[in-house]
Amino acid sequence: MMKKIVLSLSVIFGLSANAKGDGLLSVPLSPLFEGEDKTLADYKGKVVLLDAWASWATPSRESFPFYQDLENKYGKEGFVVVSVNNEQDVDAAKKFYQSTGVAFDAVRDPNNDLLKQLDPGDMPTAYLLDRSGKVTKTFTGFKKGDEANIEEEVKKLVVKDDDKDSTDKEEGSKQ
Amino acid sequence: VKIQFIFLTLTLAALSACANVEPFEREVLAQNQMQLDPNELDAAFRGHMYFAREGTHGGFGAEEGMCGCN
Image 1 (cartoon, chains in turn red, purple):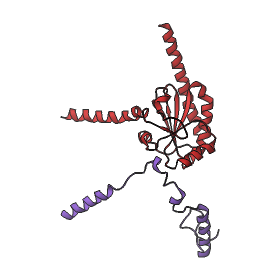
Image 2 (cartoon, rainbow over the protein chains, first blue to last red):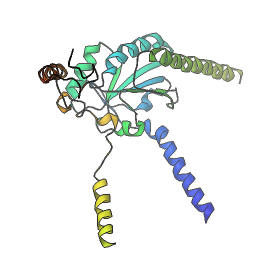
Image 3 (cartoon, rainbow over the protein chains, first blue to last red):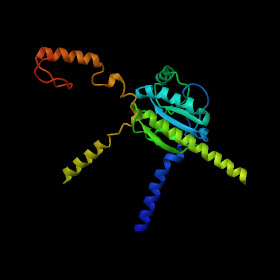
């Protein structure tokens, strides 16, 4: 009896732990401006910095230009920034986004389907996803001084994945 | 015992109405109109007038002591 309880509990906890990784990629996200719906699965093969932001969360004003710089710097190596917004006041979000002069992808999650899974502890919160779409790091809030740490983690992942890709290619050519 | 049971049930029912507001759901709460003092500058000015008139200081804000001097 005890074994059964322990087994059921571990299955339940196991499932809840898995939920964050598996469901994320398939959540449909509408564009903030124009275009087609996307999912995070569309970004598989790239290192993604997923930024959950809001126009009322003032640190976003500082984080946006930095994230754009990161994309400019590491974009060639397969790094993209995807910003996700859930505001009901879409115009406020659009106005904010345009006022910062950034050009990275902007999608919406109006029903919080993605955000409920991510469960950010603060706004904004950024998530670093590896090329398989797995969340590897979470950056809660955005404070001065966070830039170096975020860039370091991005660099690690981009370089690491590049190394892995080249190793895979080498192994493939040997076979 | 019966009264205690009713009280407990009512308390539990009332508690169920409480809900956590997630950080990403604070769009409305973050608006200026939702602040206790929506206009920060105006509040500071009114505060200054108040403590100058009353010859006291404190009760709100963290600056200065209670001597009334600015």
